[in-house]
Length: 176
Image 1 (cartoon, rainbow, N blue to C red):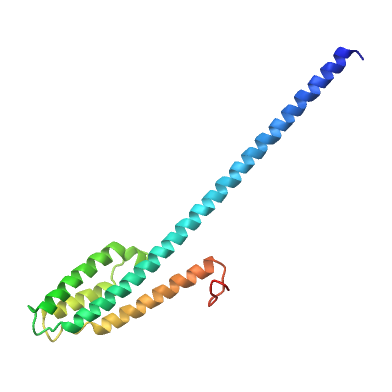
Image 2 (cartoon, rainbow, N blue to C red):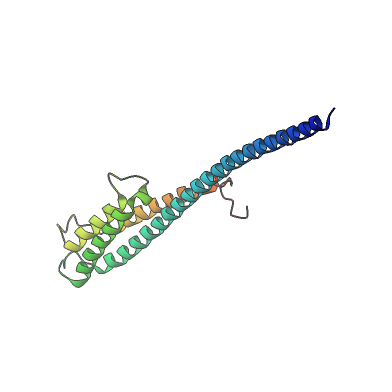
């Protein structure tokens, strides 16, 4: 074999090696990108799930706080004195609670509700403060208790769903 033939074989081998290495690098790069995209999508889904859970839990906590403050305000109101300062304060508080609920109902209910225990409480408290038909203006305290129970159930549902999504058995803590 001549030197030229050996040189051509060497150059051909080098070119073939470069082509094979380049193809391997390209395939490796494409696979790596696909895995990275899948990981990022999974990270985004987890971030969204976690953020939604936290917002729902915070909304339930705020709803509880509104109920307790509404309960306190209702204790000072009297349906026989609709124009009194405590009754006016309760009416104003009911409006604020309703506005808060309207901005957070999706986090509390998971959908736009057709009826709501929270709104029932605010409506009953407002009617109580206004002295609207005193025989029907029942104190909103029983409705507050019922809504507090519903909120407690909602929180338990949220926490249970979070435990299940993290693969923990019911009742297990973080250390598990």
